[in-house]
Length: 548
Image (cartoon, rainbow, N blue to C red):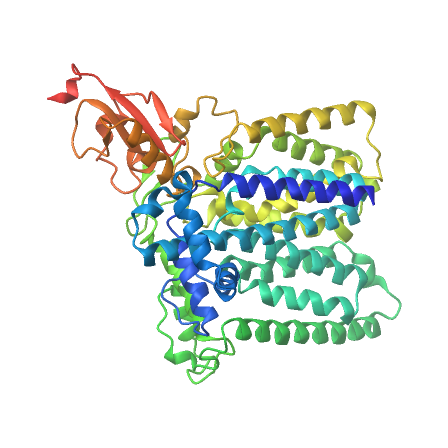
């Protein structure tokens, strides 16, 4: 009971931090579209209007629909009007636009609820592997993760993907650990359900196959069984049965989520944009009349997401460590981008705890069972680390890499596992690091999308390392408006070199859309301040050589 009380306290802490830190946060660039697709699903229409939007966004529609159902929408709009500080831009909108914005803002509550659900699973998994201490440490790291807090408050699918990838892998671990259809059905269901969260979740299939291969190769003793043939025939029959179950349940979940929209469309009727799907479509072994057992919007989404990633059509130029690469056809992404983002945006205390956990695990490996347990943490980590660092081309923010975080948090539970009780020195180090973590995270309140660890000591200089949704995703327009009211002489986004107080958005400064527009500032001046980390303030002197 005491352990659960501590776990609930940590979850309440995350709820409070997430809730209060989103108070003045304006809508990010993608939230309206995610909400709009959720509304479509709510109205039983799963047709696509954009590549990455998924049925899970219907969860974000539920709060506002509930408010309207009970006739509270007028009261909520009136409440926003009375709160002049919070309302800000809402007061300048039409009634229709104001209501639409409030609908999305209330939709953020659903993402917070899902984030809390994920926290429960992080705790349950770590406690199952490493005991109560391990579960609490993993949950504490999860609830104090500034990047997860940042995206737990948004109407996007990033947090949903993190949640479903973790939960699906957890149930796959339970299935392979305990066996039987009792555990196979939840695993199959969560795997299918995950495909409705974000296209990234499709990688769970190769990850699960990777887990099976590692476990098989790690147990060669089965090859020396006396009844080798009989054993493997029985094993093969069981595998085929489970595979059929996973396929059927998965297809049912995906079809239901997309409302059976154009299921069984012939393969030849698709107009694919990516080479890989075109090659499948043109494969002579697959007749064009072959009917695809998945809804068309699901297949079209996978194709469109991959096409956008390859061409870079919608996400502008990519930026890392002061260098910009334009997303022209055939552009080269930065190798190791997400490792660099991890080093800069994950709290130093967490990185130290991960390193300590790895060292201690190796030293005490005989007390653990890698093939039984940690392989389920290691395979997703390895797969996503390689994929995102060397194959994924949309290098626009650490939010894509959040899928590895819960696995790392669970693994950190091994540092204080019951199998190897921590000594006084280790306890002291862990406590000190947790205090450091809490101070670092609190120091950035409420600007968690823009969080950088203390490697970037001068926060005005964060733009020299990363940009895009690592710093500014449109969430701080309220703070910009308040600044302009207090500084009416400030010049926003000047179109040419000028003197005086100049305010430039970080993404404009580094050249996410136009590398040359603000080169005159970037190469010749240093910021003297910032506005919620998303906008930099410069004082351009009268005698500046660029005035000419």
